[in-house]
Image 1 (tube, rainbow, N blue to C red):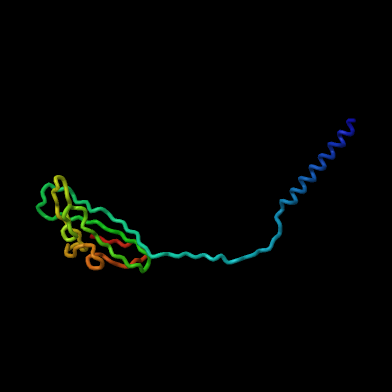
Image 2: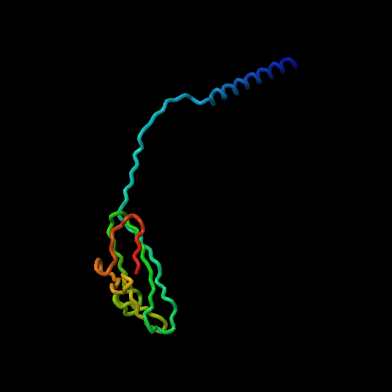
Length: 147
């Protein structure tokens, strides 16, 4: 009886070995040809602009005996050849206009201020399209308008 068991074990080992050998033969890389194709890629860029700004923060004052100068900027990034106009409205001050801006403080006190397109304070920066605005043409990178 022990002889039959040994014979059976040999058969199992032989069968296992064949399975492992067959699996090893399947893991070899298959020989294949090369095929190529062209992949089309497209992108549509619509005309548009992104706008950001820095604050105009006047320094603290005790008495306003003369003009206080401060500057800020608006950055415009538009797609190439896209025209833009940057206009600034009258602000939130009660009774303000684009040519006479007003900051309203405690007890409804107001302080007049101006926003100009140039450092000489001769060209008001308003919001009437094309006349009192800063305009330009997009270049695909940030363009800074300083006032």
